[in-house]
Length: 434
Image (cartoon, rainbow, N blue to C red; front, side):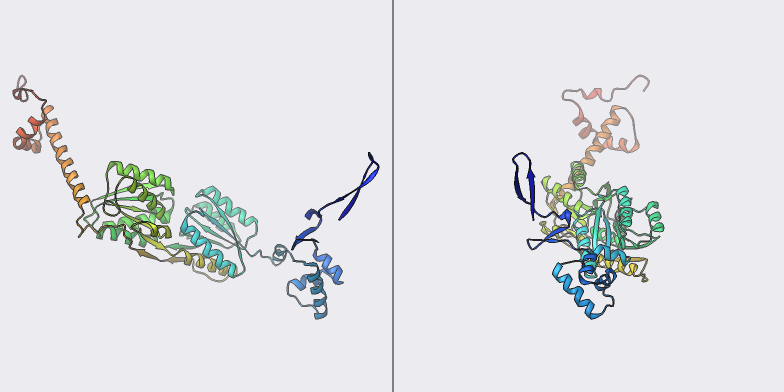
């Protein structure tokens, strides 16, 4: 396009070649700038009404002669109708809104990818919003997706409350909850209780007695409550388990490492059971940095079935949830809801138990580390007992059980506790009136 500009200073003409601007109705296709046509332009050049062109693109009835005229103009101009405009007229957008706590979690990534593929196969596209586990952002994301007139919404939830119930009641958009039981609506969940139960039973069957369970907050009902309840019930089935320590953290790798580090400073348990594989990976890192071995010194169990856990040496013992199947079930269920078909209000998905190499069998193995740990515990108990005896002597407080110990160990314990050179006769000097 050539534009002539007049310059009064030099009294001559300058010619400047300008590129076509998309703002002025041009677009580039195959390196060639073309005029951006509208449906009205197509109708005018084909000599038909705009409504006829609309019927052409919506597969409506028009005469074959007219169809050929429109097709010729469309091919010549490269015209493509606006999908958004067509969908709005058809009262659908072919868009599905998805709200997820994160996309960095391997399990969330597997679920979202499977869901997107299943929706794509049926002509839908996904719009995914993440919340970083913030409830306020979750509610805001659902409301925003509703304002975009998406055809349906999937909420991958970590916490449900009265605000979600209000959204469900006020929404005309099909609303599906994944990951948490939602009695007021439609939900799909993993069988967290049974998964926890199997992990707990396996831990106790393998002879582990001193166990730390690192959980997440109970506001996440599925992971923080149901999975935890299953683990504790599984451990309770075996009376040999005598010490279970509970630690509660957020969904944070760094916090999991810090918590594990603090636990190991106090004592080394037989086994860590971790509410997620991410927590288990953090635990594994701290155990190794403390100079301990897995599973010879400390055993590990996780939940999630991350592919990354297979890269550990030994591989992680974990509960694997079928996230790919969950994604497909979510997609198919929501599409059925969009088409107003009857769907189950609750669907429960199963799991598989991967017995990796991260758990020692303490029933039959010659675990020198555990024997050494038990010997240290016995020595510490004996030392505490001796200190109580000496303290009782110093304060002249007599207890029946300590009095018996005095008779047995008076020479061995009491004399050993005295500073060098102290006259023994001073120890039992009587006060006036005794």
